[in-house]
Image 1 (spheres, one colour):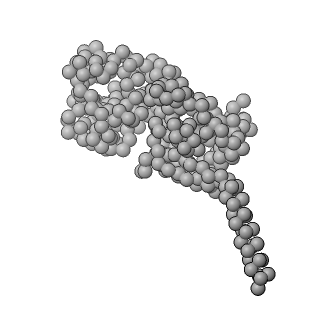
Image 2 (spheres, rainbow, N blue to C red):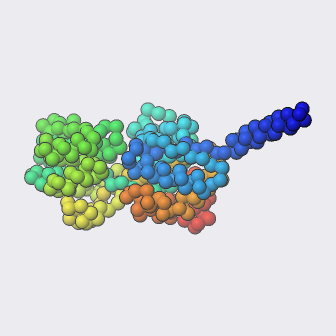
Image 3 (cartoon, rainbow, N blue to C red):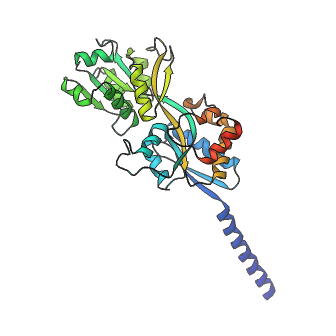
Length: 324
């Protein structure tokens, strides 16, 4: 009986230490994505599943997050990997707004670019007398403008574009105009009810309903203005194709925010290499994660990310011949 007891005790001890070793061998990653219901949250879930099934010994926990908060979470080591934007990555490493009061980031690197969202559509109700942004400025027209909330990146994009014209919100208010900062649902209501005559921002969420039920006209930003802002802040320049919406009468240059994947710089090269390879080898899963990513092409991962790539990701891209 004593021998049986000793045998069982040894067995339990061996099992305990075996489990400890296995626990140490498991790489646990925290992935910060976006709000529940958004395309970042679904994309984060897709990437998490790709990594878990492709890389033995790696577990991924996907949590909610946000564009402005994700970079600092990774920088501080509170997350390992997550979604951001090229312009935010550029801003965080160069101490630009909204990170101008934080130290420059030292522990951030990019895996790559995954898609874009067009920003700052300047839309006026069809009954508005405005024919151009330049007319609004020249005549100091008292426009009633609705934007996204001040904490959202689309508002920052609008402010930067207006600044290239030498115009501020205070200028518009001094003309007798009004600026409202609200969520997408409220913005749709303010346009539909006639409380505002201009919306400037992305066509997402309730704004899709707004442009469906209201006749709107697009006032293009000057291409030189778009070029200048993209060059300063690492936005992306894209073309809004004719017919994309009823108000798009011709192919129109448009500013966009590039969605990217960030990781900690101190994450091992081999792990980031394997994550990058897994994403590239499961492109269909990325495309199925939401309408923003239906055109995902692994070769575009090396596009504008706003800063340096992680060495592990670079190694994979060099093997593919996508960078030299």
